[in-house]
Image 1: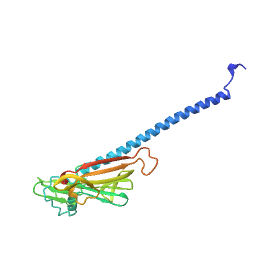
Image 2: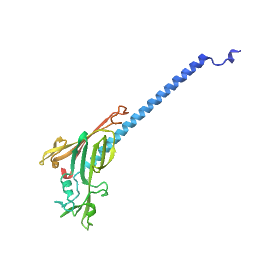
Image 3: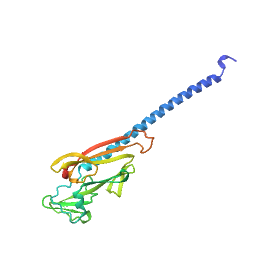
Image 4: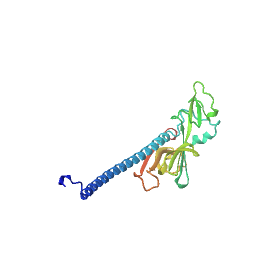
Length: 244
């Protein structure tokens, strides 16, 4: 048989298979590395988005805490007595077992245009202001306006931050939260408007000047297989309007 007519020998076949296997393994490693990088970047982006979303939402609502529009003082809450306590302490916090937190805010319902109001204030901004529950609200006449007021509750437990109207009816906002804490910047006295110290549970809500939020978000809470590093978010929100 002529030399040019010979087939592929066993040695050549094994070398070709080995080279092919090396190339396949190399391509596989590149693919796996690219996939892991994508997953890590995507997980980090999700953590960043969750943290910024919650911080931005809470900052907007905390900043407006204690804002009740142009009502005249004193404000009459006789038709709805439960508004008296909310008006006197528009920001409160309750701490429970396992570092659980319930933060309650009372503010004018500007963002939702009154659709979720707990109370309505009927006022002419000069001589009278009266708070009503929505069902008992009388019709406004010329020269009067209605200011919707709502209660916003944030809770933290079981690695989730939730929000709603009352602590027993809240919806999840973000998960994989390893830690969530709220502290309050307190003025030393009513005559000194600057926050001088931060406390976990204030005893005089009239002296609150700012709120500090600390949030720790993980890719997968309480698991060792996280694709991105745990991020800690911190922000300080100055209160204005009634609490300043």
